[in-house]
Length: 109
Image (cartoon, rainbow, N blue to C red; front, top):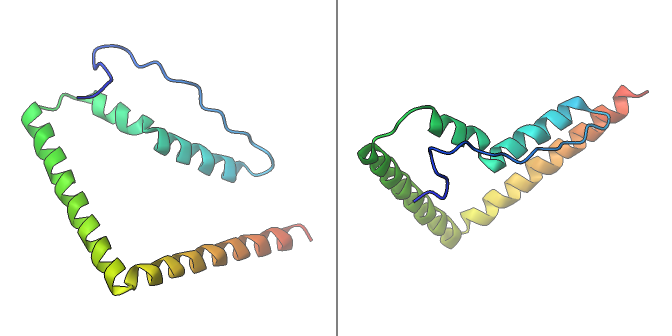
């Protein structure tokens, strides 16, 4: 059961993002915050009626997908592939950070 009553209006707390120098960065932060709070998902959910049988089916399929994903993750952990994946991910993230730093330095010269 959802804690939100579908018939009552949703009262949202204000979202606050500080814009310093880079509007794009503030825009990304806002999008991440909206995604994290689940605002758009809730809005879309309230746009139309979903039959209880359809809702159960959707949730059951999501649970199955989550279980399969967790099983795959466990297999990857056992084989050592998971740590390799994490290292690759960190390496890509560090590369992006370096690229952004270089772009920031070259743009102000």
